[in-house]
Length: 415
Image (cartoon, rainbow, N blue to C red; front, side, top):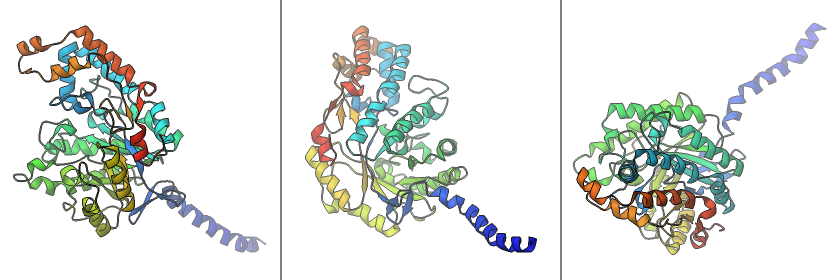
């Protein structure tokens, strides 16, 4: 009898063993995956990225404050400290982080019909360096976790974008650096870059609302090409090193690689498929809306048979937005426009009302502040500046912003 029972149960045991072996692939299928040039959702449907960048929230940029040469966080912060002191400035930045993007913003993005957001962040949010009102115990995970939970409620996928890397990856204002892509030459910065991404990947490794990790925003500006061509040669090895670090803790998420020269030059890649969960991300601004203006990205995408998506574009008229969006869609290139919100009117989904006396702040940033005497002479009325900064914190809340319906309609979304 025991022998008969054993003969009956043995095939079932084999089936049970087979099921156990299949748990890992089933787990992996809970995440967005790559299939040739397409992204596939867990239910098997294609995901075509349509969304927006939460720019200026965790990586302030001067032009969104109407500033010119005061163009990155470091110099914006310095100007604020000169006008109203470091303590008020620290308070301002901590409130800024709370108010700029809230759950109401995320709900509205979803209501328009979008399916995803890109969250640019500064690497200092994950260190003990002085940044946005804190000089230790940075709250990067708290801020991003909150946004991710809001996105999860709305079923919006998230791409995390290191917009400002250790040492600077671009060498211009957008990476908050010192005018050169030191990341490409500094071993210490490279190590920190990989360590932060490993920390981020460890934290989010099982989160299925995360689409992927955009490792570097717009690496290696074109200014350095004549004398520093070796910078381009260093990009792919750095990507590989970073991906290796991520894969020690996270085999679930896609890694996104941007080309050199503003995410525009993909000839820097020689080993175009070194990971089985990778894709590419391009950026393009201020061009015509013809097939020729996107063909280089299409050619590269087709040559590697991996997805290509437009991580940033926009800052243009509604007519241009409409034409460019249709062009990308015809070419199977998903998109995240830049940015969601700013004070500068139009060319964004919602506009922040400009506070009274903000022009005093803008004018101060234009002055010669090269020594302390010039700072003292140029400093505007502190109470008016504090009031303008406080008003900005209130104005940036979603309920006080203006929806740009023509822009949203041009995107093919519903205002």
